Amino acid sequence: MNRVVAVAAAVGLVVALPASASAKRYQAYTGNPSQPPKSAPDGTELNQFFPKKLKVRQGDTVKYASLGAHTVSVLPRGATFPPPIVGDPAGGTYTGINDPQGAPFFYNGLAKFIYNTQVFTKSGDGNVRKKDPGENSGLLFPSASGPGTAQLKFSAKGTVKVLCLLHPGMSQSVRVLARRAKGADKPAKVRTRVIKEAAKGYKNARRAAAQAVPANTVYAGAERKQATILGFLPAAATVPVGGTLTFRNMAPSEVHNMVFIGTKTGDKATAEDFATAHQTETDLLPFAPGVNQAMPDLIYGSQPASAPGAYTYSGDEFGIGYLQTPVMDDAPGDPPNGLPGQESVTFTKAGTYQYYCAIHGQDMSGTVTVQ
Image (cartoon, rainbow, N blue to C red; front, side, top):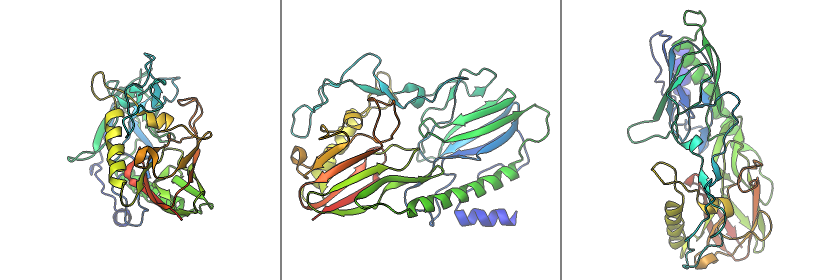
C-alpha cells in the first residue's frame, strides 16, 4: 500500500473509495477523480470513467462522483448514441431575438433547435436489468456541497457499457458476474487502478498540450486518448491586418466555438456584458417545465458566414465588437446538416481582441493581436 499512497500523493488524487473489502458497493468517477495535479496543464479534463473496467456481482451497486459536467448512462440494446441538440419537434423557429443595436438577428425565422432531453434529463430507475429500457443520470455537475453523484445497481449477468452522453468516446465496461461467483474486483485493487489510470490520463494531457501548432492556426482544445485541454493553443496569437487565423477543434470528445468581445480596453465590457446576457436569455437547458432552447448562435453564428465556416472581424460588429461562431465538432449529421471541424476568421483592423468559448466559459479564453 505504500506505493499506492505515494502515487496518489504524486497525482493529487483524493481517494474516497471504500476501505473495506466489500464486494457490494463500489466507488467510481466520471471525469477527473480529483482536482488535477499542479503538473497538469491548465484546463485539463479527463473525459474518462475511473476505473475504465470493473467486475462486480449481481446486485452490487456502483456510485459515481462527478467533478465536471457528465452523465452516467446505459443505452437500451440497439440504441444509437443520441445527439445533444436536435431540431424542435414542434417545428418552431427563433423569434424576437435582437442584436446589441436592437435589430433582429438574421436567424429570426430560421429553424429552432432544442436540447435533447434523452441526454440532459434523468430517466430509468437506476437498476440495470436484462433488456433494460435505458438508464440516464441526467446532467451531473458539482455544487458547493460536493461532486454530482449517481448510482447504478447491476442486477443481470453480462457486460454493460456505461456512457457519458455529453462526451463521445467516454465509456466504462462493467462485467457483472453471478451473485456467488468468484473474481469480482476488490476495493483495494480498484483504488490502485484509479490512481494509475488517472496518472496516465494526466500524462496524456501534458502530451496533448505540448503538440506543435501550425502557423496561422489556433487549436480549439487539444486531446490525447480522452485527456482533453479546455483551452486555446496558443492562447495569444498575432496576425497582420488582413490576416486570417484558422481555428481547429482538436478535441474529439468536446465541442467548442469562439465568442469575440472586442478589445482589451474600451468596448470590452459592453460586448462581454451583451454576450453574457444574450446567452442567459437564449440558451435554455431543459431543467424546468416548458423551458428548452439551444442558443441560436451556437448553430448559426451571430452573423452569416462570408463563406462556409469563414468570418470577418473588425472589432466593430454591432457597434461593440460582438461575434460568435457556430460550435465546431466535425460530426456529420448534427444540426444543421453537419457542424464544421474548423472555422477561419479574417481580422481587418488593428487591435488586441479577446475571445472565449461559449460552451466552457471564460476559463477557456484567448487573445488575438492584429498589427
